[in-house]
Length: 199
Image (cartoon, rainbow, N blue to C red; front, side):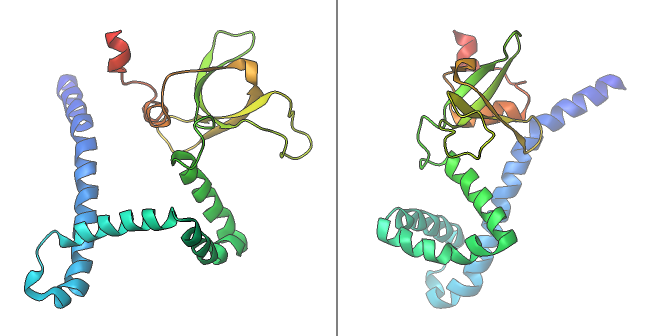
């Protein structure tokens, strides 16, 4: 019975990521098709075909990305953000999500997205994190601001983590990008890096 349970769990862990990915893609496809069928189909008539909703959704996202990359349109988008950046509760939520998204986009400098290993003083313990701040000077009084960096430590199996401020001498850069660090942290570093293993 234990072997059957073990095989079941292994099979479940194998199929679960694939199943969730397919399910999310299915939701995106059905939602975009439903909107396209109700709004676009009457306009296109016989030119409508299944899949056009997904194509239009992807195209709209790409076009939006191009538009907000233009300086003058970015200012207009900033005006649209005003309600979200001035209301007390919504402001905190919106700014937090926006800052987190910008960190993983190309808008953040490569220096601020550096993956590092933190060596705890007087200990052999090491932790992997992401540099989020190289300058402490704009922080409130009470912070140690000289030769310190902010490092985000993602937690395993949940969305969350800790941000710590450590002396620069305690960190050591590693050759990993942000996505690799987040992916490995999410699964508690259980997956072996094949590129490293080959070396």
